[in-house]
View 1 (tube, helix red, strand yellow):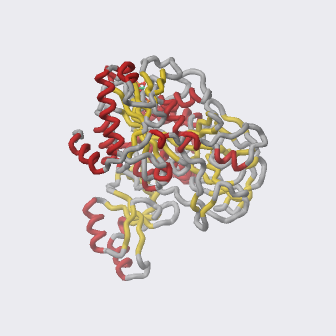
View 2 (cartoon, rainbow, N blue to C red):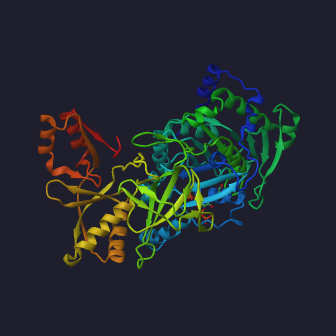
View 3 (cartoon, rainbow, N blue to C red):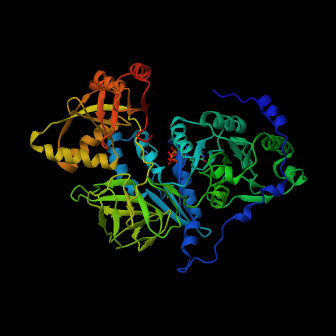
Amino acid sequence: MYKIDRENLFLRLQKSRKRRTSSEYEIHDQIIIFAALNTSMKFSEEIKRRRTFGIISHPDAGKTTLTEKLLLFGGAIQEAGAVKSNKIKKGATSDFMEIERQRGISVATSVLAFEYKKNKINILDTPGHKDFAEDTFRTLTAVDSVIVVIDVAKGVEEQTEKLVEVCRMRNIPMIVFINKLDREGKDAFELLDEIEQKLNLTVTPLSFPIGMGYDFKGIYNIWEQNVNLFTGDPRKDIEETVEISNLESKELDDLIGEKAADTLRDELELVHGVYPDFDKEAYLAGNLQPVFFGSALNNFGVRELLDCFITIAPPPRPKDSDIRKVNPSEDNFTGFVFKIHANMDPKHRDRLAFIKIVSGKFERNKPYLHVRHNKKLKFSSPNAFFAERKEIVDVSYPGDIVGLHDTGNFKIGDTLTEGEELRYKGIPSFSPEHFRYINNADPMKSKQLEKGIDQLMDEGVAQLFTLELNGRKVIGTVGALQFEVIQYRLEHEYGAKCTYENLNVHKACWVEPKDPKSEEFKDFKRVKSKFLAIDKRGQLVFLADSAFSLQMAQQKYPDVKFHFTSEF
Ligand code: G4P
């Protein structure tokens, strides 16, 4: 349990008696405003006005609610309730049937695009259920920034920790939104402290709550320097905002009461003294995380978040490939597959591959190189996604996501270009948490089984490892439920039957020897032969049966490196 240590905070305040003038916050004007949204808009302007991001949170923190309110502001939907929750509702008949149902919904919510103040905003859905974690990690390779939602009462939860860690590793710019301020929750400073410690972030509050729960009066918007009064009326689009340029003014006392005003002044002094100033470069480099407070359900604090977001969040960013860094403004189109959605209709083997455009324009019917297959492909009906519909588009720009109908050509991580042979990096696999042998239960259908397993793995449903010793196949998943889903889909989509057998694996580690020809590595391969497997890319994996055996192997073979992700 976290305890707020105000003394410590005051010490920090003493150390960094930095004061900011109010004008320092007036960097609003940096917002990129573009003249007109017409067809003649220049390519570079199209890039600059795009914001492609993901919202990450632990289930139930309010991701769906926040998404919905953002769409309402963008005018993309007319009423709340239009975005279906992508999570598994408690008490559903069967979690597994729910996953099947959710697969249907998740095509619709995979990408939600809308226009807001001349920006084109693409929200990429990051499924909330824990069994979808791997899918979520991959989606994070396609975002340019994220918003992290935290429940004011629950604070930092497990899923948030995992997801933020991935973002931190990739230096993805993050804004934190602390939600449900209309409810009783943790003290704001306590939460900021918890975020810094558990998530290893450096925060800078850009808004601050006035009271909480029953006493919640509103928010002081540090970024815009005004007070937003909380009415608790979710139907109101925009809460009452009162400009307060001088915090010492009597107006503040009149507005929220003397006591609350004094507390706010003290707290803001603490905020200014303790936390670093907002610095856009530091935020963009992933070294500083602005924090907002609000209540998504009540539509409170959401507009402030969105306005700040479009101002500071990055447009599409350059991306590393195996041979060079690619800039969004380059003329030639490049993009990569970060998600595949397959077989919604079992009668038609159709799959939708989601491509993030990294550079250049993607044009309908133009031939593009599928780098892994060294094959040119044309797409006659690329889909673009909007809040409630998808439609065929002729041209898409960097930052956008297009959905391409696929008959089995793509797998996650594939790169498309105009001819250049480059491959995008950054779609790692993580060690699964559950492992089972998969056996063929119908010898007449072994081809179907193989094909089914192959395609489901391309889709990223689970990972396949083939044991070196005897060629047996092992499936690794993030959640135990995925085994049922795989079994069901193999039967219904491929006509194949499988059974599972338990296998005790603590962790899958990707193996990197310093010298593949060394005696040490040969000895490792001989001694551990029972535990070695090959993944889908042909990389060697050590399936350690316990934390102890992993530790022993690490000690005994210092020149062999054990990685917890497939990318090292
Ligand atoms: P998720 O996508 O992150 O899983 O969360 P979701 O938006 O579905 O929100 C989880 C629950 O929290 C929902 O209640 C939602 O109404 C509630 N919630 C979201 N934002 C706020 C807020 O600002 N204040 C309060 N008090 N509640 C909030 P539910 O009862 O689980 O679902 P529902 O029946 O309302 O859909």
